Length: 472
Length: 162
Image 1 (cartoon, rainbow over the protein chains, first blue to last red):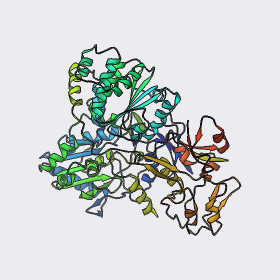
Image 2 (tube, rainbow over the protein chains, first blue to last red; image 1 turned 30 degrees about the vertical axis):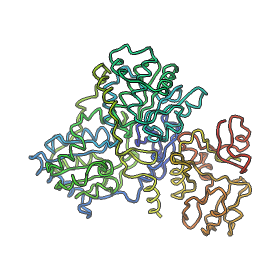
Image 3 (cartoon, rainbow over the protein chains, first blue to last red; image 1 turned 90 degrees about the vertical axis):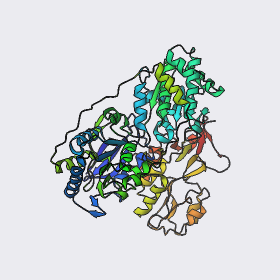
Image 4 (cartoon, each protein chain N blue to C red; image 1 turned 60 degrees about the vertical axis):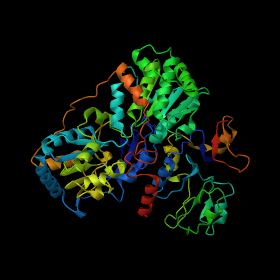
């Protein structure tokens, strides 16, 4: 008996619907959910790859200590022992992957207080989604969000970064808008050429920050000049080029325009907010993130520590035990010496659905569930698991509960402590933003593409082909 | 007859069709992508030719053009000699095709899905709707479409809007 279960893809924040056909608790087929309004049945390579991920022959099924299988109880007991020893020195840390559900993050915060004796919890967002979410929230007043229909009806679309690579499904809407009428346009602000810029009418290449600052200044000028204080701070000493002026005029004069934001730079994100706010009227901002639940997690998680903090503490020998759940830190942070930092830690526990570079450095490896195999709230929606996780794999929250149980503590998910507060773009913020925009942005160490997940760990085309080879 | 077309005006080269094809055909990739420039990738689709070179080249008659116009490969009789791969003038069977279960990989327009009333996987998944399964005559007669290379290579799957 095959049962079709609807679910969503969380490889980016669009939340495409999909259907998993389940037979005897095993995912046997993936089908396209044409009724889902977000994607109308369409899926990119990453979404299509989901079934392969669930049933992948390389999945981890049992906890392993130094390569040898152990029982979960034994693994939990050893972690509990390590945590007890480290608790007094406050020498424990927890790193959770950005694909966790809101409940799992709540449990992690509770776990830190009760079992680790500190609040050293970091969430791994290698592409900077959390910084972008916070930056957008800080300047969100007066910046209306676009719906998918707005994107499809946009007359003058400005894509910032490379939304087609991050989310190919949005490309269908963006290109439909561009092709709907002869005077409709798609314009791109990005560092150099990319998948989106191939379709651009106007392309402001070079630095994303400089391009956006020019565009904001030109838009303010085209919309009647700088009146508000924050506008004056942004246009000060900026001399937009001819392309930026032409694009800004077209953006201001169009009935309906959308900025599609796909960036890992919080400064660029705030400039996009400023662009929409400056022109007002029917302009909208549509934001894409790499992690489906980036917004949910950032809302709950006030930011106790960052991955850099944890690795820095490890380098100084301040950490005796670190739990890394779901995140492949070695692949996700190529610019940091993760291996060197972890070599200073007495006990490294890594949880992952597949063996990866980080599990290769761990003393204890735990199998974890994919998000499709765990209940939880993602993107503001409570989802049920489509399938059971294989073997002894558990969701992040269940692993933490098992360890807490071994320590004699019962965990309950914490309620959000601090919600993101919507902020206004005022004169001081705008002045700081204008200064920041003059500093060239750092090139991100890792970027998701149409065929590579955000943590860079698994599915580039090469490893995908190699895995298919391994199946035969 | 319905054949696959690629709308070059909306194809972003995301390669979703490759993964979908691979998945639906149980890890046998029958449809690939080719890179035509550093940042431009296009699907390479089987034309199901009227006079198919792969059919003529097959020594075991396992490659056949059926009454519905689709060129199919019989898994039972294909020995994997790769004559079809050498014969295909469009490189559809040639591009890095591996032998799958000792048989060459061949697109049959997802016969099993079409029987269930579904679209071929590549068409169903294509994020921008660039891959389309359409009547050949309808496309060739459509005034708003331009078939790239229509007058030089017989059936061309690549279409644009002039």
